Image (cartoon, rainbow over all chains, first blue to last red; front, side):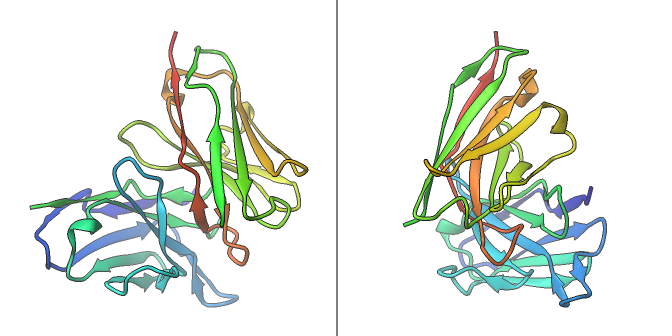
Length: 113
Length: 119
């Protein structure tokens, strides 16, 4: 199974700050056939279901604000949230869909400082 | 509008079988893959398995021996059955629809069914 390692596990931020969440996979998620990275990011607010933010490592889902930016390739990926807003306080998960079983990172909890 | 709704028992006794139903609307289970994902209280997400739009299934190898996913296309429902439940199977069980073009990306989720395994 592909192991997804996220860091940090939690992050305390003030509104307006820029934050970076890291995700590392135990094997490359870059498929040579299409040069795409099989990596998605989800946001889960308290008491809610996960919500898809980004797929193909950097493509925002429809309706997701452009302050959410995904980057990276191969085994190292980053989710950057610029100018964090109070509504962004949540747990963020990366997920690989290169192969089954699909696997998630342990999550990064974004908290208010 | 795409909607998924899980339903099932809130309490299951150890060693018994869990049955959860996912009723979907706004799309057909014959056109989109559907996965089950679970989340223990206060912990992260674990992919349980999927039923592909063609009807075949794929399971998390860690759970495969206890797991069955099936569907009723006439009712647009997907079913999860897991036997020999233990306390660490306690958690919220979500069903999720996949993006049509992307087999592993889940773009719509149900509200989740909270299940406690306890005697």
